[in-house]
Image (cartoon, rainbow, N blue to C red; front, side):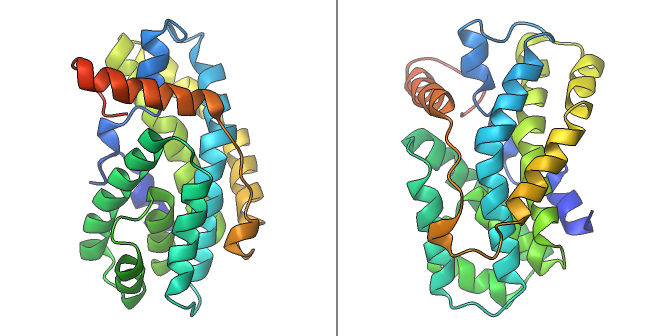
Length: 228
C-alpha cells in the first residue's frame, strides 16, 4: 500500500476524523449497538454503503490527480458526490473532514494539483481531497480506495470503544476480520476510477442518512461526544 494512503488512514493524521463516529453514536443511543457482538453487522453495512461510496470517489480523485485534468473536473467530482449524499448532516461532516485533511495536506503534500482542486472546491468532500492526496503522493486508485474504505470502519470502531467501553482487543479483531471485504470494496471502487463523474456508482445508505440527521438534531439539543 502506498505510504501516502497509509498516512491518511492513520488515526494520528490531523484530518479531524476523531470527532466523527460515522453513525455509531446514534446507533448506540438507539440500542442497536451494545456489545462486540453487534459491531460486525454495523461495520460491514457501513463499509458496503457509505464506505464504498467514499472509496469510489477517492479512487476517481486519485486517478484524476495523476493526470492532467481540467480544473472543472474537481468541481464535477464534488458535485456528483454531493448528489449521492442526500443527508445534509452527512455532507457537512464530509466537508468538515475534507477541510481538515486539506489543511494538513497542503503542508504535507504541497502541489499545484491540490491548489487547483481547492480553488474549485474550497470545502471539498473528504474522499475527494483524500484521494487527490494519495494520487499526488504517487498512489494508485486502489490505494486511495483502501484508505477511505478503512477509515469508514476504523472510525466507528474507535468510537465504539470510547462510547461503550468495549474491549479494544475484541473491537480490533472485528476490524481485522473485515480485511477481505475491505479488499473487495477497494478493488470494486478502483475498477471505476476512470469513469466520467456522472457515471460513478451510487451505493446508498438510507438508514445512515436518517441516523446522521437525527444525530445532528440531538447534537443541537444536548451534548454529544461526536459531531456526527
